[in-house]
Amino acid sequence: MSAIVLLVIGASAFLTGYRFYSRYVARWIYQLDPDFKTPSHEFEDGVDFVPTNKHVLFGHHFTSVAGAAPIVGPAIAVIWGWLPAFLWVVLGTIFAGAVHDFGTLWISTRHKAQSIGTLAETFVGSRARVLFLLIIFFLLLLVNAVFAVVIANLMLANPGAVLPVWGSLLVALVVGILIYRTGTGILWPSLGALLILYLLIWFGQYVPFELPDFFNFSVTEGQLTAAGGDMEAATAAAHTDGVRAGWVILLLAYAFIASVLPVWLLLQPRDYVNSHQLFVALGIISISILFTNPEVVAPALNRNLPADAPSWFPLLFITVACGAISGFHGLVASGTSSKQLNNEADARYVGYGGMLGEGMLALTAILAVTAGFAVFVGVDGWHEHYSTWARASTGATAAFVTGVGTLAQGIGIPHDVAVIFAAVVVISFAATTMDTGVRLQRYIISELGAQYKLKAMQNRWLATGIAVASCALLALGIDRGAGGMRLWPLFGTTNQLTAGLSLLVITLFLVRLRRPIWATVVPMVFLLFMTTWAMIVNLIAYVNDSRILLLGIGAAIFVLELWLVFEAVVALRRVLSSRAGT
Image (cartoon, rainbow, N blue to C red; front, top):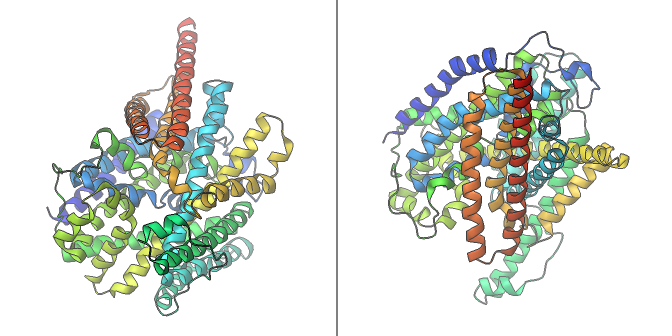
């Protein structure tokens, strides 16, 4: 199968979906009103509520949701064959993920920029709000802690990416000041910032940076055993643990600062510049495919799955995760984006269009690992990489980075520079997801504080401190900087569960408005069914493997899900009864 065919089919489907289906949803279901006064104008405070140009807001929303997950998920899912992953990314994005993102942005805008968790109280009941906020808090905690570890590992593996990643922060601050304090137009500063970023990528290969080991961890018995008694290798592993822990602390410190600064100073300009970077990355990958026409070596349907690989049905829909639909996106849409939406009519472009960009990233991830990576390692090397579920899972990011580097080399970009470029793309978007996630976690803590009348928790500094401290505890409290990875298997089910419950809240609102609900009900039912099934499959596996921590937390989330669905059914019957009586 030619990679060009898949690229053209996928991109054409996304364009068609935006041109026709999103317009239908905007006009007949969500019924956008350009005269509606958005929360960014009603509550403008210069910190969180800031009316924002739709292109800048698109950049923030797009890069906040386009983290590592839409790369990692599809890069793992191709182990079942490229066809299931391709179909779910394309169809799931158009008919589920984009409708979800668009809907959560719209419903939050219509309700004073309240989060989707808080809105659960309005449409389901007071108990639902607390239950939903607890699920959301766990999801954000997991995302922030794990992304800190993932970025730290990428810094370790790609020291040439350190300079451009951290240098881009200073450039973003300058862009923010130029735009909002001097009145400079946004286009030229952002393009200048992008140029500086690429110069930093070029220089990064000559000035790699490695963080010193500030912790000097001692060698553990487990490390010595894993090294086969080789003390030198075990000492190197302990050193890596120390450096990783240092990076995690620096990243969480940055996330603290980024989440309390006004959005216009760092978050908006950084995300806007990064959105250009992502467009360039998508362009480079696409052009490379068109020029080199690599062959997709993965089977369409893999009938010789490794012994440790689970069944693709229903696990495919959980593994691809953000590449097709993601509950985290709804948290961004109803958390930060709804507070910056200048005009309700912009919600289609930001929400639906942003998810299409995410789908395009997932599509290129599929092509990078099934074609570009294969060119680098050879067909036999590709099959060896996907010979076990464990190898496919742990090597997904590396396969993507290598694949992009190989594809870019085909159009004349030096391989080493292309690899650093790909690493910067992954790190930058994982970082934007993390700092937005910490800000969202601060919002959730403040909302829980308001729920229980704890005024101190509503202070943004204290709430952010609690958020960062909890992430640090999860990331560093177990396995010296890799603790969050223990709970990562719960991300897919928790994330998709959050998306399904968000669609449920939107559906209840549409029922109240007496509008068509099929566009939200169909993906909601499908997603909740698949997530519940996958959750049961995973819980059984945790029991069989005696993974007590995952079993306990997974079972708690499963109970919360069933409880919330029950509350929603009761609320739906209540609404339908009231409509019948009128």
